[in-house]
Length: 343
Image 1 (cartoon, rainbow, N blue to C red):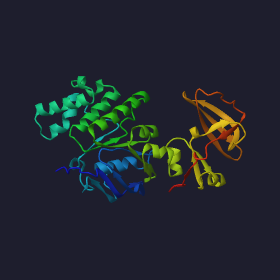
Image 2 (tube, rainbow, N blue to C red):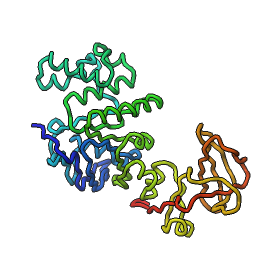
Image 3 (cartoon, rainbow, N blue to C red):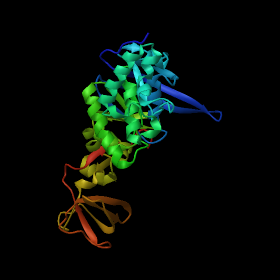
Image 4 (cartoon, one colour):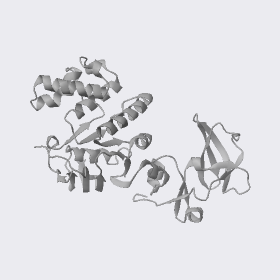
């Protein structure tokens, strides 16, 4: 029997997972507590090996936790197999059956449940309409593009009407332009269906553009959980400030003066280039990088880390490399952060 998911969606309570590797114990997920809301697009973000995928697989039932619990809609499912949980998973490789037609791929879960052919094919056609690919029902997976296969994998996962959909880097194999298009489509589909999506990615831009909230993983722990805007503008640790976007990190007396903290952060776009009067820092321009809508300046400062400054284009004047430039920012721009658990 599959347990229903009621308000509360997904709750992880002190969830940990230890793997054995070459005779050693590796702590992949370390005491993660997390509450994911019904209908939320929640992203697990972090670098490779940070624990995000292991956490997702424990929610899906593919990996058993070493300690802690997984609750779906208030029900403890920690030790239930995947097929007894009201969740489904979309993997990066899509895992479509190459010998089956697209229609049969989408309808597969209903076939396993014993639904009669006409009913399951009718439902499969509805899902192909939903992902805007009704015309490919008779084709095989190798006849489709990467973006089309990704949408078919979504349709197959959605046909069993899961309350929670788990997505393990499903856009990772797509080229940049198609990936950006699919980000929009995926978010629109989630909003239309009202299903809780839990999305794993290492791509900060992807996470910021799609998510209602984001949990940032670092060495098995959750460093911060926040909305995209909060995460970018008010990171709590140095790791989050560096991983989500680009940050200038100030230390010591300068940080205490600007933000009343031992560490402070300034985003590159918050800094402006101007005259010497009132400048808060000065240095030698080391490089200029062109990014279309802005230029990125790297400014070397004697005995300190270089400054990164983003200037929007068109700019009145871009300084020459090798020149001394003066940097300005508002007193409210600097934001205090902590060193974090793994400093």
